Length: 346
Image (cartoon, rainbow, N blue to C red; front, side, top):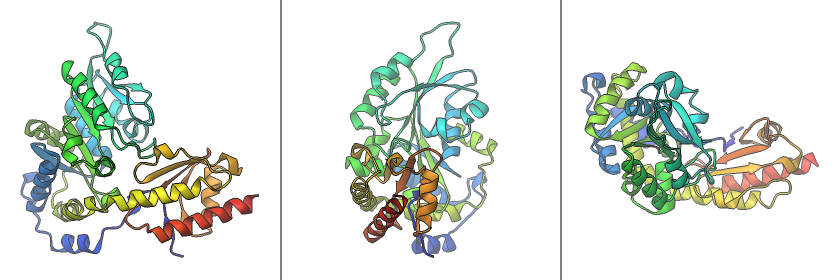
């Protein structure tokens, strides 16, 4: 059976053009700085985001952790949204790897309030850890792909500068944010000192993420990348797909957003399924299916029998994610299958 896979945009396969580029890629030893395809990708990424330099890393998690390690020292404190990816899905890396503790703040649909951020900055006191970094996430995964507005990022960045604190942006899906805001990617990136973004997910590359920042920051970050096993030698094969991702896939994300909106509009009309349409901004749809009498896990197992894959756990939340390999027709078929599953339960 060919499944309609709505579990995540991480399931995307490299496109035929990416596979061809990977096959033909000119490579060298990247740890020595001798891989021309990696250098091309890094230069392209830095230029696109308006930063001095860039570095290829294996994953978004590695990119975030390397960035935090580069910005901070053990015993310091960083400010994050309470449901951010760095806190929720990165295995406690900030404590184990960077040796820092987290000051978490409650956001509004994933968006931090600048006033809350400023209040959370520690005053100088022998008893307190020093606030050494502010981390933002745009789009926000657990909030449902919600976008932090430019004016909010600007206010938080100005607060950070006033206090001499750097800002790191987990921009795993930053191109989705730029598509939603209808701005050049630089307009988001300029309000962060470092940015991580994924080449996989909606951009369809099979492996890899990018960290951008100043030349001095990236030079220091390379040591931490090496420490975490990120020296990938002939990484040009990965970088070749990333170049295609930046050249081609960043321009088509509105299609994914439109399909997510179509999916959400259909889901809200199915009895027992509840969702907040205000959070349906990009390619992620978060739902509460408690009204169906099924847990997320039960729902996902039944839906799989009808050829649709979704992520559902032991609670009543289910996440749907659209991507390059999900068409409008797939969305309609998925909605039909979901209606059948809900009807069968009742």
